[in-house]
Length: 246
Image (cartoon, rainbow, N blue to C red; front, side):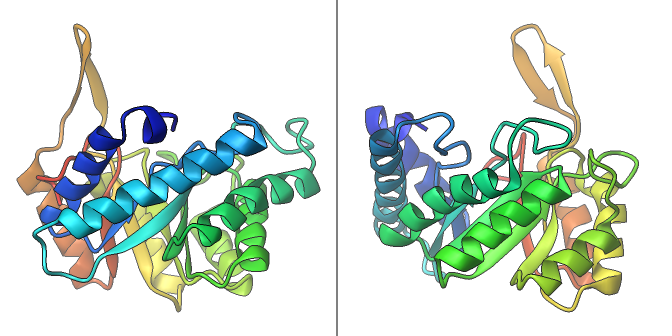
């Protein structure tokens, strides 16, 4: 996240490449920006710069589609009690600090993503709803068993997140689009809000010092398009994907 300040041109180029590829939304480089990792002063500088970098990329892009910027909110890095040592109320305030800054500096929406604990997901969504009027997308990371790390199945997450006012619900990370489709189809079966998916480009494999993914662009697009035919409304990419996948 410090690259928002130290290497802004690189961050802007990445965002611009995604806009040029047709993205309607880019996620600001704020996934790990929270008060456990940064002082209050540095956190504000990082989030301000992150949104400014995305805004500059938006202006520079040749794409003519509508373009928006999401405040990207990832896991805190700690487990909540009783599995860990972070109190629920402290987690809510931790996420609230990030949300308030994102709203202050002009994010168009919030995406809470890669959450693998239903309790932490609840804390992040509560913080987003109580501290902004922005649309909130919520995406969880499910394992190969189709459940979160802490055991919740997709239907339980839909019930909780819809009840709390999430504007869209879905899944990201962990798996390629074919494997993740099993989770997404369960969400589609019971969700009454738009459903999103940001799959990985398959599973990572190490080749020397390089990390390679086993799902290529055309196959990724084919699998994602098949889910869009079934009702998926927000489609993107997670680990291993590039603008060419979009």
